Length: 264
Ligand SMILES: [Fe+2]
Image (tube, rainbow, N blue to C red; front, side, top):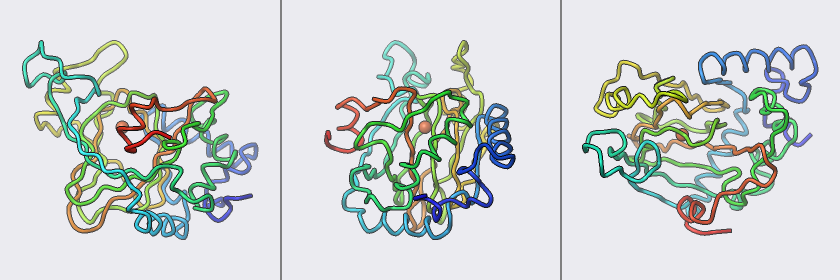
């Protein structure tokens, strides 16, 4: 097994999903995800692996592609036909540094974990997918995102059904993952509710606990979410693990260019 040192297998037995403990883990996580749109697994990745990944992110920081751009919460062009404070016209800012998959060494702990079939099977089981594939994208399959002081991820809805993240390092202050569960649904965009959040209403906002080592599942299609601006000297560092229901899933070249400054 290439990941015995990366996951706390005593607490999270992803290598034996057919055991009673393995089944209980999947059952609990799936229930939490269906119920709340989030499943947070603190201490999933070992302290040693977390420290190695945070150190790696700093060591190869010069490989990161920095982006800083405005966008709408829908990642669609500004709708010129609506008032400026309508969610379809409102722009937020996202600024971050992305280290692409092909810069992450083959022996890096999270890369070994990501490339293990045990983890893919566990993710598929929790998401209740008969089959799930790791992304085929040479840049985006697994990346490391660093938010330095002043950087942030603006409010948005994901265009994909779910995300899987691993936290390595929290900022001294700021850098919180905030979300508003169920703000829209498949048949109700709830523009008035979205507008209120964008204008500063904090009544529905929750903060996702993100201790280093936490693996999190998040349904971000209907929950508005963001990472608040990082303050203090310590960057926020995490990874996004990308999966698809097809084996050949890749970003298009335009998106590769935008996220990583190049195509593969
Ligand atoms: Fe997102």
